[in-house]
Length: 473
Length: 152
Image (cartoon, rainbow over all chains, first blue to last red; front, side, top):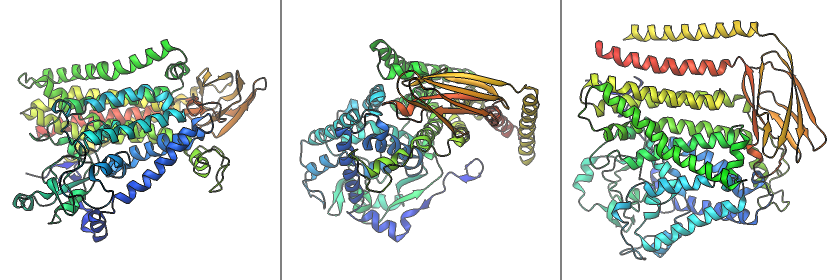
């Protein structure tokens, strides 16, 4: 039997180990890494918080905090970090550093024995994405404030950092990152598409290594702070890339690999099954993308007034419609197409829930593509503001880099439509290519998988066309 | 397999060629006109928010501010004008490029300023039609490939 190749070109089992290069391997095993990156980002976030607190110009486009978080960081996250390097933001995120510091009682080096704090286990019924799903959705209710009002950004970021610390005092390790952080959920979802992964190299070595230092820790590093089993996990979703397993493995058996994009989407094992909370994350992210594009990049003034809460009635209508669309209407329509899939397949024995949940993973590539298209629409027209704010971060009249008076300059906005259309097509292709493979996993017979795939193919095509219309129609 | 792919490619090329030539023909059918629009700018939207013209039209946009100073910059055309309250701005240009172009406020006018946008649509919107056809062709093509594979 031939190898399964994506688009007939890329072997799905293809991997290229980046940690075979000594420089990268040494870096990953050093305790200074990613700590230095975290400390650098901590410094940047201190400036972000200060500038957001101090306010500066009334308009957010001349505020360091707003521009760095909602323009630069968001775009980097969606354009590069998540699609290519998985959860590298989590690797360098400064939010949980105070909780880590408290638990470990030190910033550098390794604390042996029990960590400080209550170290409670996270409640079992909350060990899923639901808090992150709802938390992120609620956060977007206030996007008309966070993305334009410096103080609102200060409150949001300050609140997240404080919550991360408080939960670090109460719950074990990175429970906050795993189950609460609003940024974590969508990164986890879309990192399944990422073109890189951290995995163990040789399973046989792990099998023989009974100490499992990657999970328990040793003098070189901590047991997995994300509570994973590094010797066996097979999806990027919950790996925060903290690199502790590289440090604790005595056999150098952890690797950082390049891989074909999207292979995690095809993983559905007993230990890491497809789940409805992750499925809902895909719907929520798609729903938010539709709302955000309509409000922030669409021409409809009435929507902007609603999001800005110029009237309470308008604002409540917006958040109700937004929540209803993401939580009920979009999943409801998808459920209908899933039901049609079962009808078309002719196999009534496959549970509808399985069809619904499994096929929802086809929205991961398409959703990511939509967000990338949205991000082009943020950075190309607004990127030049960054030159201003890095030269005068507190709006105190500084001109540190000599770019404080750089005028607003849209860059390649004439190509925006081409870029957005092309991005949609590329990610639509990935959704189709991976989607039919999911269909073959759902239905036992190939003919059933073929017929059952048709309604989902139609759904994905319709969604792609809707976003294409929004972008360039 | 190669024959199937070749046929598919040929079919897709034919569809795209038909649409492109149809669009080209359609663009000659449009009479080139002079068109005038008065756009009212008020925090943080334009009225009308959508301007539809045809390729080759001579378009004049008058920008009227109803509150603070606003600007209007047209993506793709790189044209800009500004309007202060009581002092209108104006742009005249020939709509030589087709497609959907965002026009956006170019003067910081308040907290929602980066989101103050409108759309200029210069028909026929080939770019949109071609992308629609590509998506449909990919969708149908992938379905055909999936079903033909099992017959072989």
